[in-house]
Length: 109
Image (cartoon, rainbow, N blue to C red; front, side, top):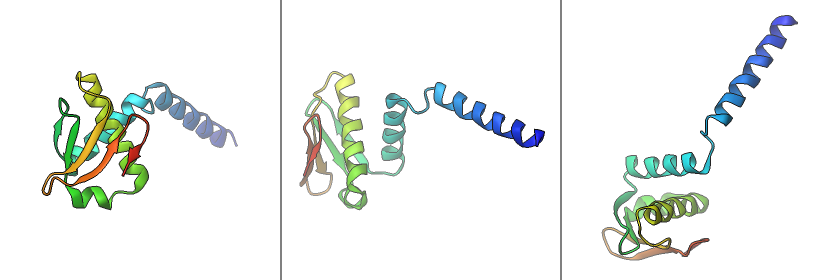
């Protein structure tokens, strides 16, 4: 019984340490999203001055709607930090077709 209590306390302490480390902060979540987009090859090029992100259209359309929302938000937020606009047009890198537009609140398809 004492061993079970000790394990429960250790798990609670580990969870608190992860939470307090900032791993779940909005900035950490955005950085993780950007890292996944880059390593998976979804994002081909960012043009923050133009407010555009050129993506692999096939990979973009394979993403769920909420993943597309999160990706567009992360890209626009990153560009805004770089001095660009907080809105972002998502374009297919191969065809230049417009896949969506982040208007600052939501992805409009």
